Length: 73
Image (cartoon, rainbow, N blue to C red):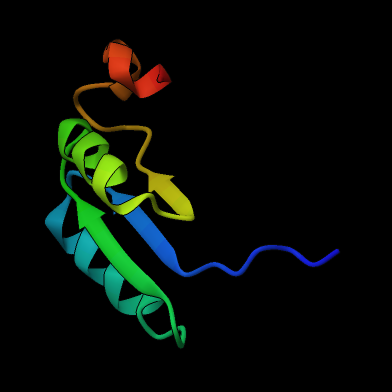
């Protein structure tokens, strides 16, 4: 049984420079679509729309996504 193919990644970070670097680095992978969000709220919206295969989060963002009831849905 093979692992599912990784096609979409959502990267969440409040630092624009870091978002850009990560998006450029991950964008080098052939066939991988990389999206980025600058806040937990924006990440939740994107996650609902995009249904990414992987979400990478900055755990030191100013507002924790754990405080959002929708984050646990």
